[in-house]
Length: 352
Image 1: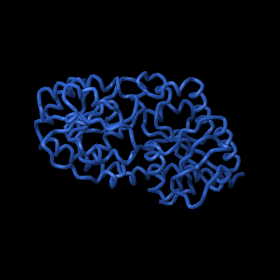
Image 2 (image 1 turned 30 degrees about the vertical axis):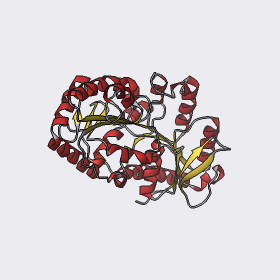
Image 3 (image 1 turned 90 degrees about the vertical axis):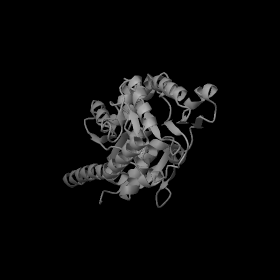
């Protein structure tokens, strides 16, 4: 896919940077690097670039896609790059205002009013905002009328793993912070199922939810894998036979993408998920929708008892994601946006 000379800048080397910057850059053959700090002292590290890079080198590119820029240093850099003819896009895959209202988010105190204003000043200044969901694109259009939708894709090779044979049914959850309140009612249902069935285990990855069940069921049936490097998540998820994805009725969740479904599907696991956040799931075919904890409990019991159902839905989910949501296919959305803004840049340069 021929695109303008593009640089992707991810905010650190966390999972969001991998999905929102590294994967599209790798699929498109574009440059990508992580950043820390603010210009003029921003530091670039890791990534895939052919040479050492500094802020002063950025105008060598036609387009820069920067993940969640914030602060006076980045605002000044954005305006300077634009004056030099660089098209600057901001990638934002969270509803940032929702984080500070989330009581169970470990970093909500870092997203106060002043911080949100700093993010939004940069979003107003850029030439366009890239969003991971239609809901986000609609909301951020109030800040910048030029919003683009580039949905997440999944790196299928990373999840090309075999589910081992075992004598138990593993029920799993994986993710980062901000999900405790939504998870608690579903965890109560998992507890009931584990009381009914001694062959059901619970595994949590990223947050230590399984520790809460261990006093009753023992550590052999309750495994907590702490928040760690993204590379370990796929292997950890092979401990599951069923994956869970609860959510809540808030803007925080409405801004979330369906990554949990992509990840579980790429392995071949059936997912029970909130229908608001995961609308692409075809209930009973590529996963399951549960609007209440009680619905989730009923579906979980059915899946625990029916291995063929687990395998059939997991296989259908994997086939769907492979055909429609691979990182390579998702990169085509980015390519369309980059070609559009690149063409406008050339037209503007010709007029000027």
